[in-house]
Image (cartoon, rainbow, N blue to C red; front, side):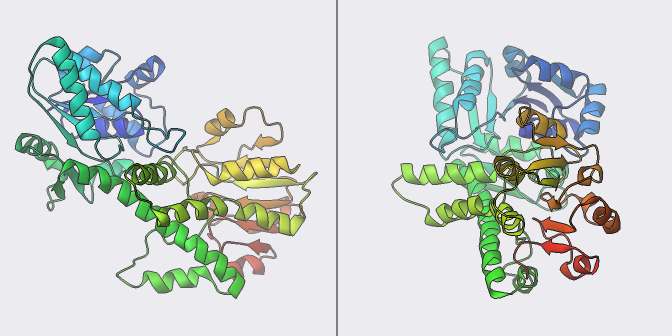
Length: 440
């Protein structure tokens, strides 16, 4: 099938590349000249495991191409995926200008039937909005051309996006006409061979499903983080609690890990956007208000523990920071707990020596003017002369370090573990003071 993808950000690039991988003829559009030139050379502007090799492979055989030409993009694909950004506006709502612009461009350039598919995370009612914009543009041109609009939300985890797309647990299709449903069913056949993963529904339900999924996962995280603070007060261990409740099949183990808060491009934005949608429709989502408040508070927990150990004036202190991305296997630092922690430490006079396997360039971009932040060449070099180690991102390489080497490099044998990746008894046996989340 001939596929066009508008937007080569995280969702668009993964979608286009994976569709090309199974044999489709894919053309991706972006307005960023530098990004398109980079992609044409088989290089990618983001870090995502396995994606760069897949891009290069499909570019080399001609199944995946990139363009700056909107007319070419519209002409190419029978199916037109809109995968542009929907960043949060000042009021928390999703900024729809890029989606509207993409829809308008399709309406201005289409010459025959197109299926337009919203892949971006968009508010409920966007399919109707896109349909209206295209009708407007066709009316301006004085032409009548048949088209369909559908919702096909993405459920891609950063760090595992390629695997999620190639082996999805569900494929949600929101459409109100049989032609659109059958085209998408055909498109997704290669990803649907083991058992039927398609969940077909109306467009508004599909749009709400995406927000509801992320809001539920964020709720589980904040619920465990709030329990973790109580566990510390009671002398209980949140890790034991996690195993106890996770063994209940009605609850399960996923997203029950206490830590220093969630971040990234999805959960914070989507929780805000869903609350905004509720307010616009005359209702409130009190649980999500609490989820957001708990997460904001949780991002301060590590700093509170550091101040309790070293005092409120941190002048002259240096802290080694392991992990900058909001989660492992990505360089994404949007809403990352590390950002608030770095800002808080620097504001109180401390210096920070930080290391992350892939997010160093993004850190340079975000903190270019901060003289108190040093970016180390390795996890161990970050420890040199530091007063304590702080673990913020649970990269695998941090799970089994040489603790004797850590103790030798640190001024004080102190570890603050924001992700509970170490066993408290083992760490204390190694001679460390150990501070984690929700454990005695």
